[in-house]
Every structure is written in C-alpha cells, then in structure tokens.
Image 1 (tube, rainbow, N blue to C red):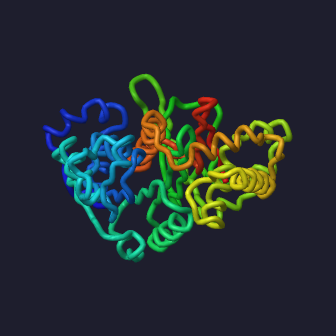
Image 2: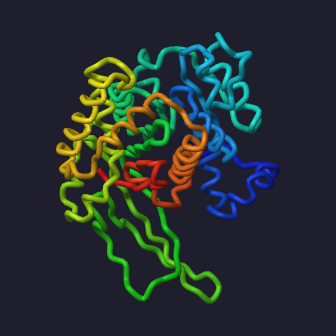
Length: 346
C-alpha cells in the first residue's frame, strides 16, 4: 500500500466527518488502498458500497459467473437488464457511480485459476459466499505474501465474518491513566509494543500501540479455544458456529447446497452435533428445531442481514486501514433469530 497520493482539498471536504474521527493520516492510508472483492452477492454489494463511499483508492471485483434472475432478489448493483452478462462487469459499473474518485474495475476470470502472485497485488482480499475449500485456498495464497484476508457469508437469517490479518499493528489513543501501561503480552493474540504520552491542552494523552496476531482459516476452524470456557459460558456459545462447520461438511460430503429431504436433515443435525464435539462444546446448545431452521436458510440471501454483516465487515476493513481501532479477532457469528452477533477468538 503506497501512501504517495496526497488527498486533495476537495477530498478533505468530502471526507470531513471521517477525517475528524480518525485523522488525515488514516484517511490517506484508505485513499491508497487497493482492495479485491471475490464473488458478487448481497453481502459483497454491502461491503463494496461502504468501502467505496469510505474513500478507498481502488476496488477490483472478481467474478466469472453470469447474472441470473436469482441474483436480483438481494442485490442492488444488478438489474434485470444485466441477465446473461458477467456479474463483475455489471456490478462494477454501478459501484463506480457511488464515488468517481475510487478506481473500480472488473475481472471476469475464474478465481480458482488465480495464483498467489495475483493476490499479492492487493492490500486487502475479501471473499464472500464461497465453499470452505476455496476460502482456505485463497487465504493460504494471501498468507504467502502476508496479505490480510476476510471471508464472510450471508445465510438467510444467519451469517459469519472471518478475519486473518496475519500480523496487524494499531494504536489506541486515550486520556492518560494513573495505572502505568506495561509492554508485553495482553492476551493470547495481542501484545502492547509501545506507549507514548503527549500533552493536549491541559490533559495528557497516551497512545498505546498494539500488535494482533492471527491464524489462517485452516487452523482457526479446528481451534479448541472454546473448550476452555467455563461450563456456563459454553452453554451461551452461539449454535450458529457449529452449524456453519456442519454446513461446510455437508457440502463436502453430499455435494449439494442445502439439506432438503428428511434424511438430509437428520444427517445435517448429526453433523452439527459432531461440530459441537470438535469445538469442545456441549451438544445441549443444539436443538433439532435450530438445525432445521438453519438448514432452511442455507442458500438464501436476506438484504437486512447482508446489510448488517456488510456494514460490520466494511467498517473493520476501514479500521484495519486506519490503524486506529482494534480489528475483529477473528470470528463474528450472526444470529438474526436472536439478534446476536458474538465475536469468538479461535
């Protein structure tokens, strides 16, 4: 990410509220960022909208599929007249209209044909609504060049966000505390690496610089961190988490998108229970009613859910670029049925 493009007076006026919030240096980093968005769907529509309006430098939309009538229900960058055309090309034309200062381009080739060198050209890679094997493949290629990677999916009432930012440094500014801040580990993933004190008027401010370390998806999805929780806390873990793992396993085993028959639902319920055990969670958090509801939602897109998840993921991208807030570590699990979105470090 090159910071060689100076923000113009016109851009300062346009992004005034953001600059007041996180400063000109953070906005400059956003202005220089080159983001890749893999796959066009309801969730990626929301992400693209938010980061383009936020003032990133450029966005590339990668999708080899053509627009069908099924794409029109939950998306606002595609129209009926686009049916039969490439999704990336059709969406990018309307994304560009949101902010002419952002360079928006389309890549209509197949993401499965891309190499690590392709992903190395970008500052952030975001992949949505893909199979887990594809997410792992892209994540692993990004890691070869230490490129931050986000994954996410909108699954009807449910959804998730996963972040692998490899090794990320950010700063928190606050009023100086009477308790001195010590350098060193703050948690299993985060360390305090620097503390600076500055005077701002009559008050003293301290700038605490932290470093967050991440795991790739291939490692994180097999984490046993939740098994170390207290029994009462385990019972509060969202059942959506093991259901997502079961969904991936069902797709791998059955080769179909969603359980449809009675025998499929039985198998899916058993897979959710297996996922609970793999995570070290009590199977009591799962009910047949929940698994049936989750299975029914697989393969559907709901605009309100995509808007929530897309807003959270886009904000985290801007937080990463701004280096002023702690980013997601490392899963957000969304349950629209209970209106909850817990964060789990796995």
